[in-house]
Length: 225
Image (cartoon, rainbow, N blue to C red):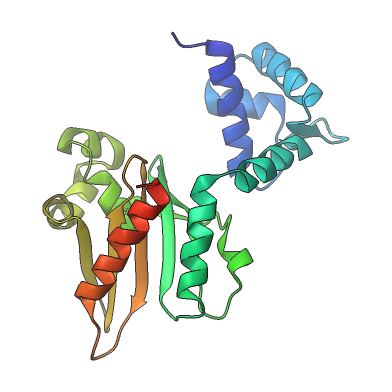
């Protein structure tokens, strides 16, 4: 049974997490179709828990409690421990490793390594891109029915990526070539609504089969398998 008050509180926090500036009660209510009085009660509760911060203009943003929660979650997470082992194994290889999840019409990157950047910068890299522009997005959409995909991204965008969706359903690892000479590949992480991908794959002697085997192994390790 859905606890509506808890559900709405998390909706409020999720909204604040996506905004770059503090937001007032009325704007939160408008965006989430919630009564202002209800939003006020939710914010008062979240303030008491330090999950939100209220500035002098009575506008809200995420509070230190969220960051404290996040720090504990990452520290004790088997997911991140497995990811760190994989990143350390790869080292300074120019290949980029990306792990992403769906968020509406976007893919949010939980991990995104970049050549020359530290491992620390790879974690919590919450960039987001349209789901249709991401090989991770295509792989995650492929687990849904055509009707679900159309309701999420619309019939026009669905037809644009339909061929890739079909390929993602046929193959455990989706491989796609991007101009001028780059390959990307993505694999679903078992037991999670997330996928892992490799990008910046280029070169004349690129061993795609070896990379696909590595990607499947990494996905299984992250899932605890």
